[in-house]
Image (cartoon, rainbow, N blue to C red; front, side, top):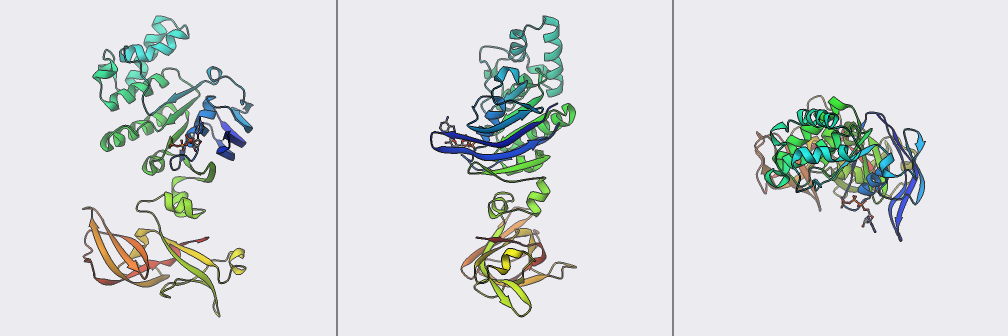
Length: 358
Ligand code: ATP
């Protein structure tokens, strides 16, 4: 078991700041997911933990000890990559055994560890096969097995499932979750897939442009995104953003959109009173827009929209509609029967909205 702590860590490649003054901690036994768009710096963060990348500035602590200059081999960390990195001329058994062999373990110790990892991952029938005779999912399981046999203090995963098809990705996701429950080892897992992030992470760090935007539990990230980037990145389809401005009314400060259908009292935040007349974004999730006011919901606004398209997925539907010049998407149950071109009212649960200054 181990803890990981970044203290004001930056990494520059020439002039590019891949990681920019990042501080956060991964607790013992925690499953931490780093998620963000391509090039945001998540792999660089992971590689710094493994010691595969120098740290330009700041401090990295492993188990409370400064580790900036600790050689990778002394970190007791195993890393699983996207491209498996198995030895093609070796069987699965030999691939699992290789790292233990060069560490000088006895044949019987190696056998015990390999068989234990194979049992956990249910790959016993594959042990005599070479990688080319395995499916992508099987190869990835062997790659994970190679990390497990070492019984490291920390597992690092760098987009381990992105080469697999959707079905297999779902299966492997469950296996990784099960594995973590069983082994309780600290994990840092990099992905750009928000479903993986939401389903696997005890906590998720959302990264953009080398900076951590928010670290929270999956549900809090979804319910209380700190900024527009996080709100737009977590959730599919993403949160609707309706542009408008802050207005002073006799009843207090409100958000109003250009069609003046959406006039919503603003929550108490000191910054709003200094920004009267300034642009503000109203954010609402697709599931908080309904064809009727939600039961028991006191705060809602009715919006006249024109439906452009209804996308039916069987278990739910998405209605894409226009509110003035802006587009919104609503998540409906499959029973809802709206048609393209129809003008309808959408009821927004304004109590569940987020507001973002620009
Ligand atoms: P992806 O999801 O595409 O793998 P990422 O979020 O993991 O992206 P990083 O690989 O950490 O992003 O890269 C962050 C930034 O640093 C990018 O702008 C990238 O081009 C740059 N970068 C990464 N490695 C190097 C390097 N060895 N030399 C120069 N620039 C680099």
